[in-house]
Length: 168
Image 1 (cartoon, rainbow, N blue to C red):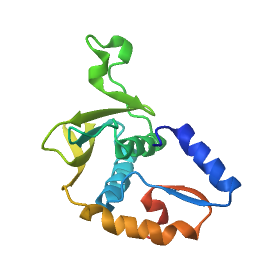
Image 2 (tube, rainbow, N blue to C red; image 1 turned 30 degrees about the vertical axis):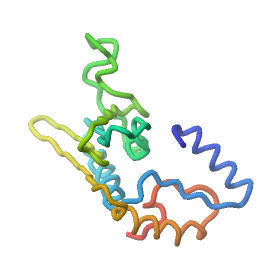
Image 3 (tube, rainbow, N blue to C red; image 1 turned 135 degrees about the horizontal axis):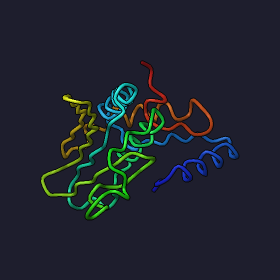
């Protein structure tokens, strides 16, 4: 499992050395691709954001690959404002979630959830929430999976994210 930017660098180096194609996709749902794109657009204008990652009680990776990728993408737009630094916090610092690339990410693991990801943006007196929810079937991932299979041989090296091979 890829868990860091260093892992992606190693994959890219190996792919380039072997003249191979690697398409690294954390989530094949088209609606997740749109959530990522819309969240990147929002992060250009709203410098206050966090991510909530929801899934079932048995999911062992925390945060999910989808949340990790979203944090990476948003951090490339800008780092969110910190209103209270970790040093200023009183109480359990871990209650604020994980800090990934400067972005706070919270993971919920409970029965009743399948897979959801939410990017929350806030300005004074306004909030924007962009959320993806999927059901228990594989259907949300089929179209993106087929697209990835079709496109993976059309480039060399590493491409990160399904949107990197999509046409808009």
